[in-house]
Image (cartoon, rainbow, N blue to C red; front, side, top):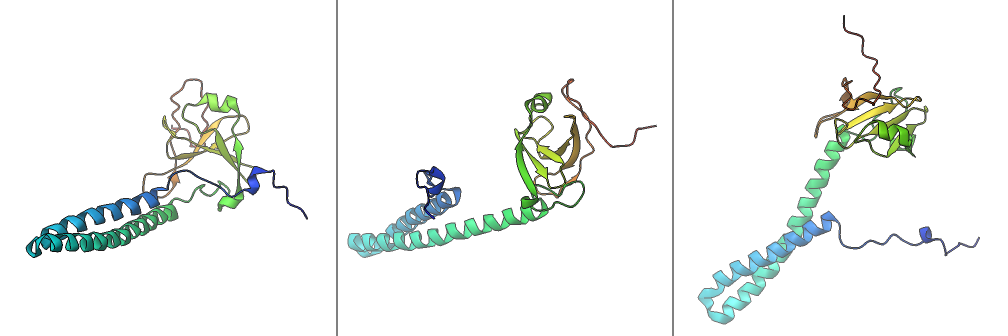
Length: 191
């Protein structure tokens, strides 16, 4: 079977610049190089100008190696902390029925414009689970760090929320800031 090479998706992904992890390793390496060279220059002063240069070069190379290992350690520690956080906050969280728990159980979809206009701060892409329920998330205006249900009639029902490090918790917030937004809740009425 012949592959159509005119399709751009066939080509490997190319990017410009570097990732944050690569940048951190480079910054640690450059800092180690400068620190090692400066320390070597000071320590090598007792051996004259040739000793000063030799120790500065050796200190710079040693600092470079130490900086590379320090940067890699920093990146590994950061990744471990992020994985620890994500273990408590998997995204997307399980659906309301509890059947769909993995990212593979959810399909992304475009939220209809009339629903997007009903509430400020809603992301344009939502998630639809295998059960058929539609969910959305927000980035500002009381929707930040929240996962809500989008009902078939376009109404929004709060579902889950989380803090920076905490797990997902039930969202009992039913207040709508925009007067035209329709929010629905299953919370019992106050007596």
